[in-house]
Length: 136
Image 1 (tube, helix red, strand yellow):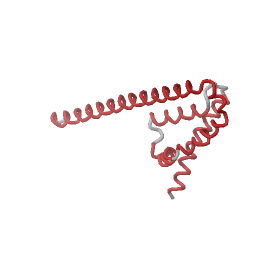
Image 2 (cartoon, rainbow, N blue to C red):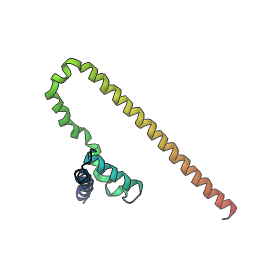
Image 3 (tube, rainbow, N blue to C red):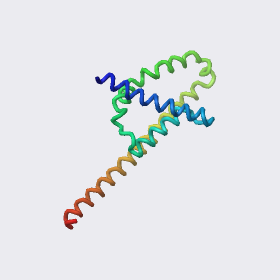
Image 4 (cartoon, rainbow, N blue to C red):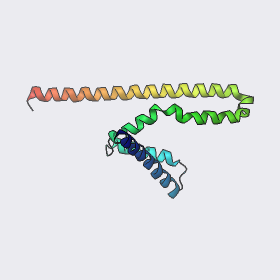
């Protein structure tokens, strides 16, 4: 039963990918269809029209095995080692810098979201306590 659920969850993700690709082709947009599908998914999550539990098991499986999905890409890069011959060390620094930049941006964004959520919960808790003490 779990396997069927995971397949359905991954199918939902593919559905968003195909919808995004269709929108991209239909309106001849420069944004890739996968990004459009991801934005559609984000909008549905933000509006709570799509509960996360509908795709949670499938996404967890995909995230758990993400390194295996990138392995063919990494091996494919080995076919183009001549690109790294001249300015290879520069590409290494660019990759390290961009990775560090992504890590810092992700960390700061996560911290900001966590603090925001904590403040929201504190305000709601204070509001509830105030209602209880005033009897409203």
